[in-house]
Length: 186
Length: 205
Image (cartoon, rainbow over all chains, first blue to last red; front, side, top):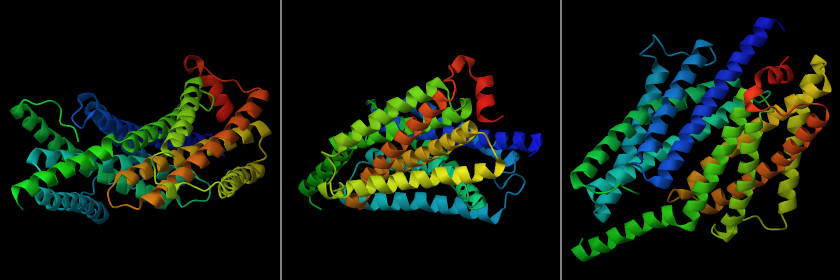
């Protein structure tokens, strides 16, 4: 084992660990929204910081060729398919919720709040699954490529979810400002 | 739908949400997720700062103690059918112990090929065990999440959650034993402020 090989292994280890750290921060931020309400400013700021950390870790991993790189290949089929699938999932959430909400005649802002809550819970799940996938990837004898691809798919999903969460939360904040009410809790 | 029924349905829906989030179960599951996230945090910290970073061990010990406390409190609120019977508990512990031993053996087999010092092998085992612990903690977050979703099989996820917590307890015992062995062999618990060089020496070089 040469020194270069060891250095590279250490860099890879460090990048995967960093990804797990930031995925854990996503989990922690969502837990905080569960406790303090989905419009809690500190939890949302933490979520944003965690997301930026995830993006940086992803770039590091792609720089080290630990994960397939998507840079310079915007029409990559797999990438587009995963994005489309994530967007479909969001749409399915909306449809399901709309059906349910119209049955019980749920007020529009509550409907939105419930929807954002669902998205946040999904984000937490993805964070936990990233941590787990990286653990599997590092376990002896496991198929590293399979888990690296699985992590990438989850990162793409998070990338689709985060703007949606931000957009919906902005909507809720506007409703809240218009109503002059306290934080919307679900 | 008549307006009286609409109001009743709305009330029922709000009650459902309230029950889910504010019930003892909802709060305990969030607590458990938070403890599990602390375990993940501690393990990633120990990886980033070295196996013997004091800060990481403090977080880990606190989180592990909280997991067992929260698990005990969950017994009162999760469906009775999801909780392992006393008669099967020894089997679950045994299976968890076997899995941990297998994990250690796999590392030792690999280390034997490289002819490494016992302390280094022990440190490698510890690192792998911490990875396993983190993996279980991530599963706890996910399974607790599934329990809060309407329409999921609560008995199944409840039972998986309890088993996972048992695994966390078993693996953390093994980790503690190995920590003691390593300390006896001369490894030093490192303060976060003066950590880097000694840790690098111990964990990698």
